[in-house]
Amino acid sequence: MIDKNQINGDKNQIFQNSGYQNESDNATCHTIVKQKLYEAIEEDNLIFDALKLFIEQNCTSPSLLQRKFEIGFSRACQIVDKLENLGFIEVDKDNGNKKIGITLKQFNDNYGDVERK
Image (cartoon, rainbow, N blue to C red; front, side):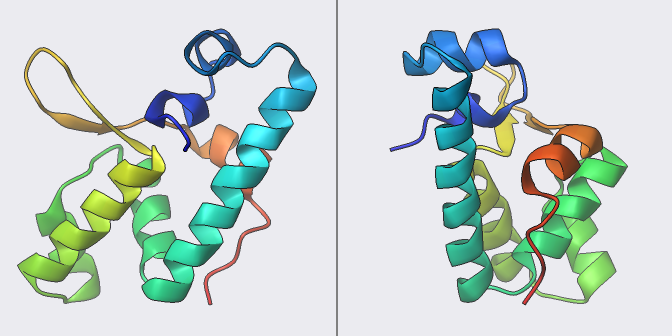
């Protein structure tokens, strides 16, 4: 199972949290997360668009998804939860606020070939 901190783009933290020892292990981590992202997109075709929107806006609000994609609160929360489970959204330990854990450059470098279905 992938730890949420493994895809935040900080290689030292990825290695520290995962026990990975080298660049090859880092690539393996991204490959696994990419496969999980493909699976999530199969389940809900808005996952990819929501992730890109959150990265671009630096915001993880379900209400942002509701307004942008004209969906209900329940579905918006499910998308946020799924992205959190995939590790793209982090929860601040101090205040519980959610934030995006990857930059647009990191996303494009590691997952840019993933396309919305």
